[in-house]
Image (cartoon, rainbow, N blue to C red; front, side, top):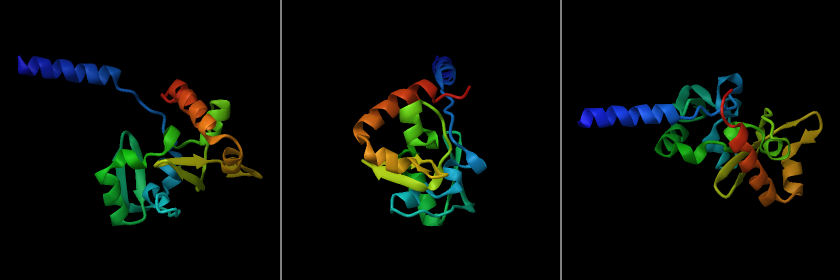
Amino acid sequence: MKNIFLLFALTCLSATAQDIDYNLKKGFIANGFDVVAYFDNKTAEGLEKYTVSFDGANYKFSSEKNQEKFNKNPSKYVPKYGGYCAYAIAKKSEKVSIDPETFLIDDGNLYLFYNSWGTNTLKLWQKNNEATLIELANANWEKIKLKK
């Protein structure tokens, strides 16, 4: 009986499992930058020898210490909106690449932004009502987060 219940539970989980569309440019979240370093208000490129997979996405870290921090609580470090530009998710409901050196830590969340060709979406984000943008982005992300 236990085996039948376990099989049923696993079947239900796999049937309802969601496949999030993470921004994996260069094969890694944040273009291979260390997501733990952001929480120290730093940017650092990750190294191949400190690589971890979590929830179907690959992460690189600049040190063994940061890799260990991530492993202790990975969901804390996962960027919002799959690592796509938070501003584009909020304003256009579009998945736009990011500049891994343009980021914001707010209320314990990591937000990444596009910054190229004279458009710094972090500055646009900060000029607007951030609480409203977060609401919009959260709603839009729910509609577009799954892989197609």
